[in-house]
Length: 363
Ligand code: MSS
Image (cartoon, rainbow, N blue to C red; front, side):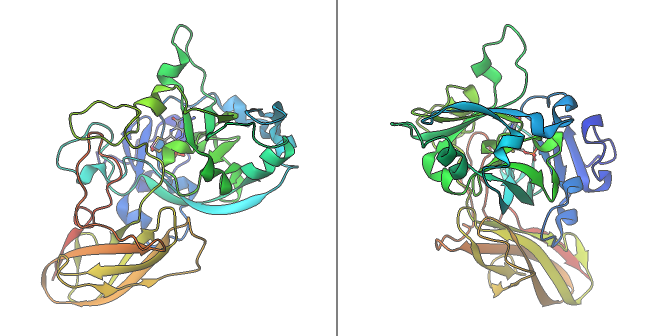
């Protein structure tokens, strides 16, 4: 699927050379283009839509966008202009699809064959959810989840819960969650969920609901299919059900972004990206011999916070021959990437270092 160049019209503004178009609704960033970028330019950020995006009329006047807030002491409908008066915060957070790394499983899980490019590091600005809650008199009694509903129009005749993008995360996630109107210093583009998007730092992409039209504190998880049976980690061949782990918290992960194919013998600059998931990435090691020996790499650039990724670099001395380059990150919780990651039906959450390794010919 390396057919960059043919961008769908709604994302024609992206950098075609840096994108792999899997389908109209799924575009991945080219691995080499991820490089050692501290922040992913919006023009390079991947796209994953479960439903076609709403009309771009909704971003014509962002401040007029309406959000319904439920499950609080004083439920109400507010505009984006109102929300901007409640508080502002900027958080840098990795946005990563649940299926990023799916291509490294052997069982050919259905879905886009994402390699490393269904992930980006983004600067989000918006109002902290806790400030919204405070303004609405607090969370109503008995609520256990934060539920966000996407603003896509549901075609008539279809029961909304079959296709609606509505996701619930545990209340704990509220501590860091924001309702974002800016992405990388600009209004959130429609393709990435403008005018208003729920950002849940440390949680998989699917929980970061675009074109957010409803924010609700709920006693139960959303009845939507995408919550009940979708995005569940289960053994290969097993159907999704609510008892299985939901794609919530991200795990520690890293990958090399260069070199990916060849290099000249001698000093070689090996670069990549490391993220901690729900806690900060604290270190990353690189192996040039397929995991037999490891050397600590150095983080590059400023620390943008626990939910951001950290570019890393290691200058290695490589002899002519074939080298298997791998990276292995550790986070503040003390978790380290495993060598292998057990296959699961939908190919979610792969963070095994061996699958992400690259074979490079040095000559
Ligand atoms: N939201 C909405 N509203 N819709 C849709 O479709 N998707 C998901 C999220 N959110 C959606 C939403 C997913 S699934 C993902 S990843 C993300 O988003 C993506 O983002 P971007 O911006 O990149 O496109 Mo997987 O886990």
